[in-house]
Structures are given as structure tokens and as C-alpha cells.
Image 1 (cartoon, rainbow, N blue to C red):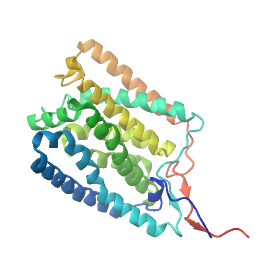
Image 2 (image 1 turned 120 degrees about the horizontal axis):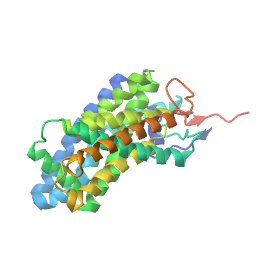
Image 3 (image 1 turned 180 degrees about the vertical axis):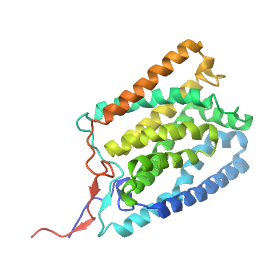
Image 4 (image 1 turned 135 degrees about the vertical axis):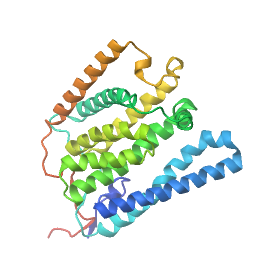
Length: 299
């Protein structure tokens, strides 16, 4: 007998391909994790005071939220890995575009769709003051700590859940049609943001992220897209001239805003058409199979 590598962080989840029931369990465990994260914040406030807790608490409590679903998925995957075929969370199906072109297109599409979402968010009711203050603390506080939280942790953990587990499970576990699986996974992505003002753009972006994942199977690409969006927002939050801006419409004439929005929409269409050049090898997308860990030697 020989053992295949099961040491990579993302590979260890490959053999758990959740169906609808499993996805609901993951979501329930995420809620348990969110409660645990809130408790960590309360402890930090009690021990170190509100100011310190607000600065450092999120960096600690945010990953805590994902620990229960990750432990569950890891155990379920390990129990299936000896004999069952799995599906990798991260594949590299970039032909004929190539990895670099896919990454550049994905980043450009992300920034473009983020700009378009800004106009949609402007149609929503005004954000409550407490939520506005919470959002500003994530984008306007200590840059390094906020970058760790929104630029590294959020892309990694949220993409692991929404694309790596949910979308992969819908495509490969339930064999759901991509036209239904991608928006359903985007809906999960929206729900875990816990407020309307983040949920609406999260759903729209989640559809693009999901489509890219369906075509490439690459979780690294969707993590990059997520990181680009969050880091761009973080940088804008540290520019004094944009600090009080509710929408890009506040920063430019309406005609300029409309022109840029149109250009962004066309760019998104071009990005989607470019990713369509990547042929889909299976009905469930370009998500690679992986063999059981233990295999017999060939005689």
C-alpha cells in the first residue's frame, strides 16, 4: 500500500462533497462559530477594554467562526478518503487562457462588478448608523489589522465555504445544474454577510466568483478576486477624500459615473466571454477528481 499526499490544507477536504443536508449542517455550524466568535469578543472587551477589543478582537474572533464547519468537513472527508473518490477544492483548469490571463481577467472583472454594485447599493435604504460605524471600523481603522481580516481571512474562509464546499457540493454532490448551483451558492455567500447592504453586492459578486470557479475549478482565483475587492475597499477607506463617501456618485459628476458604469458593464461581459473559452469537461464543471488516499501497488 502507498499513501497519497493528504497534507495540503485544501486537499484534506476533497473527499467530503456535501449535499443539501450537508450544506445546511455547515451553515448551522457556522452559526455556532459566530456565537463562539461573539463570546471571544466579549471576553476581549472584559479583559482588555473596548478600544483594544475593537482593534484586535475581529482578527481573533473572525477565524473562530469557521472552526466548527471546518472541523466537521475535515472529519467527514477523512472518513471517506480511504476508499472514495473525491473532488478537489482547488484545480487549475486554465487552458487555453493560461493562469496569468485568468487572474488578470478575474481581477479586472471583480473591480468592474464592484463599481456597478455601488450604483445598486445606492438604491437601498440608508444604512443604519451602527452598521455604518461597524463598516468604517473594518475599512478605516488600523490598516494592517484590517488587511489581515478583510484582505486575507475573509477571502480564504468565505471562499472555502461558499465556493469550495457549497458550490462544489451542489455541482458534484447533488449534480445540480450550474445555472441553479451558481446563484444558490451566491445566495449563501450573501446570507453569511448578515446584512442587506453587504448581501446585495455579495450575491452579485458571488455569481461571478461562482462562474469563474465552475470554469476553472480554481479556488485560488476566487480567493484572489475576493481579496482584490476587499483590499480595494480597504484602501479607499483610508483615503481622506473618500472617507465620507457613501457612493462613487458622490465623488464624480453623474455623466462621468454613468460612462464608467457602462464601461464596467461591458468589461464584465468581456470577462465572462473570455472564461467561456475554457471548455467544460464535465456537467459539474472543471473540478478535478482525486483518488482515494490508499491505493494498492500495481502488480
